[in-house]
Image (cartoon, rainbow, N blue to C red; front, side, top):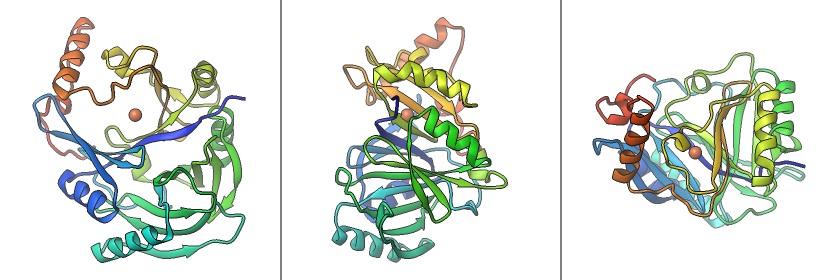
Amino acid sequence: MTGANAVDHIGIPVVDLDRADDFYVNTVGLTFQTRRKNADGSPRHTYVLAGENVVGLCLPGIHTEPSESGAPRYGIALETEERFHETVERIRSYGVPNGGVEEFDEPSPFVKSFRFDDPDYNHMEVCLRREPLDGICLSHVILEATSLDRARRFYMGALGLKPVGDLRGEELFSARNGQLIGLKEVDALSDRTKRHGRAVHVAFDVTHGDFDTMVDMIQRLEGRSMGDHRAADGLRAPGEVSIFFFDPDTNHLQITAQGEEDWTLLPDEEKWKRIKENRAKRGRGISSFDAGKTRASSD
Ligand SMILES: [Fe+2]
């Protein structure tokens, strides 16, 4: 059976990168990894780490209200009760909206959770898992779906996720390592789902053996592949294959089968040199945002 091994990284939209860096490092307690730049050296996004999982804080962000459905929402698993309560206290002190600590009985995969909004109105959550994952890491991502049947077929059939039950009106599905994707059925998608924001996506790690089958199933089950712009830009390590795609509700996703090396953190100068060279061969340039000539927009 094909199936995603893990959720590897996510990108979320932010409009003020300094504020987001400060919130995720000093209040949520994630680890600063690097800040990436546009072609002119202006800020593009910051990577913070939840253990081995990258959370990308991505400019220019989107200017919208919080979604009413509670999704999209991104959950981070903490490794101890002590860390959970310290983190909750820091988030409460910061003053963002929150839903208080919730406790769950078996068979819920969660023992405790605390939902809050970040300063950019992204719905977030920190939790303690019943079966601990690998230290601090991404625990779950909840996405909106206008048809639960169609979304269920997609996540089980194309991504090979396993159903683990319903919690809080959200249907949960597990990757091989226990990280979860949840589906929240809505009558209409919120602005936060519809408007995306540059580089906002959820990325899964898959095996080379599964990759081609998954690409095929994504198309058959009403997903839409966008190909791999990073390969066209010369940014994929040897042996690495990936596609960006949309689920049937236009949630932006990615699957990657890793190569022998990791080129994620190529120096910015080298990265932009390769992008410009490869696009010139195809008679194309880079966008004004990539160039750094435009600042925060409403997109
Ligand atoms: Fe990605």
